[in-house]
Image (cartoon, rainbow, N blue to C red; front, side, top):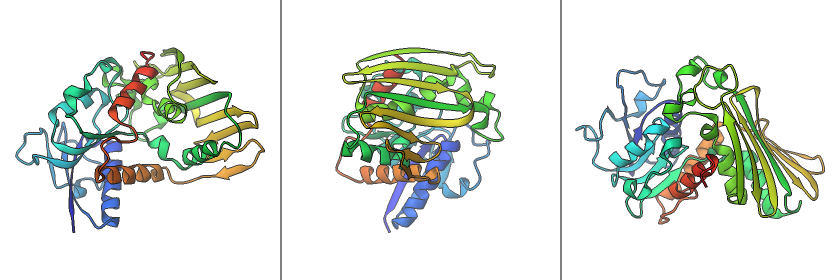
Length: 320
């Protein structure tokens, strides 16, 4: 049975999800997984079940418990620490999985060549691309049956205190600008999938700030108007909406095409509804399956390489 080695830099909620999914897929594929974790505080309790999936835990990349090189490395620590983690692991991982966004807002001038050796395999997380509703939307757009969209209306609105039940929202990175929080880049998924669907816009205007009563020092609302060669778009992101709403509406010659990611449905211009409901972890499993296939393939560039992820980050911040 082949063995796969993996390092997790940071093991919070998203890192634990990736560890669990990686473990499950390795079991399905008949692969033995040896997973280590590099953590800032070994005394901090892990999520239930995570410790049993780990071979070793340590606090520094040069700890004797650490392997010299890993097949995979997952950068799942706070956004503001991604560059530091990449620098410490330079040349020590066959393929990198970097959680989104790739860097914090003040790190957009980071030199990728200083962090990634030539030919380094790397993928930046983009789970919205892998959800059932998005896959159905992309299939519909590729078929071209509704004509070219004239305009896009994108919404992502939710209540930050409800994101992590039982956790004080004021303590998480989303609420803290210094840790890379703020709705503008925390909800970078929307711009990631828009660029994936239509490419980068030619013109972009953005207004953002902290306007609600939430106890955060990061921006809690961000609004955009964008122009592509043959399409306009508007994007609304916030942390204070009561009730989860996440969707894109495309206005086409045939009528409105609405992908409701919260409901898991795709409503066609004629009113017919395609149902794509699924457990939220399904998208992360598809993403992990892609990453494993990519890591073991001859392909050097992933479908979301660091260069593109950094471009999207700059675009999101109005630096393009």
